[in-house]
Image 1 (cartoon, rainbow, N blue to C red):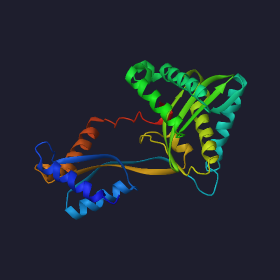
Image 2 (cartoon, rainbow, N blue to C red):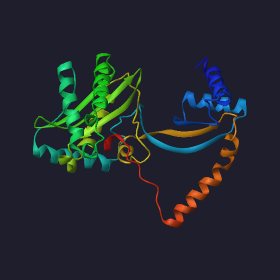
Image 3 (cartoon, one colour):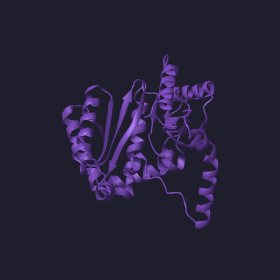
Length: 280
């Protein structure tokens, strides 16, 4: 970040002066504890730019500590998942595995795309396999990550049949949760949650892996029950010095108040988030 302030200065100067620029810049989903956020705040303070917090929420985050990640779960949650696994075992032998070679990875990819397409995303036309470009992008990224040893591709099987799969991308001492899919005909057994529990075991088994970002939206409550830590996510609106940026930023609190008041009068609720890894 040695050149961070210079980059920000050049960016905001261009936005404020060039005809292709903008009076305001929205910085979406900036971590509230990261170096980018710190640089932005320092730049805004030094350059006396207006800034407004548009939205803030927490999302589930794993951070390795002295204790077990599994033991951080409530006793009630562990018992419920144990009973769910016992019920699932009555259907067939339960197994957990990670793709260890290219042949296993190709099988994992085929099964994952099929599982995702069989669920609500497939019915809504938003599954990866619904668009060839999306499918090809996912396949290429996963293959490349595997070849560079930056992939965790896990699966849960029942009698050899895949019922839940997930993947994470590894980077240095951390990782990012990316995708999960499960067979909805097994939903009553909570296969996604069971695989997330196995994911915790896999994280614990890797001494060099110290954290994992869930990459979920604010509305994901299930993953927050399984992951104990939180990461603050913020969306910021910053003025560049070009009109009418300062005026818009000054009027923003009034506009928010009016919107809340109208929604309250009409009895409307904020739409629930459809994000979250376990809901994929």
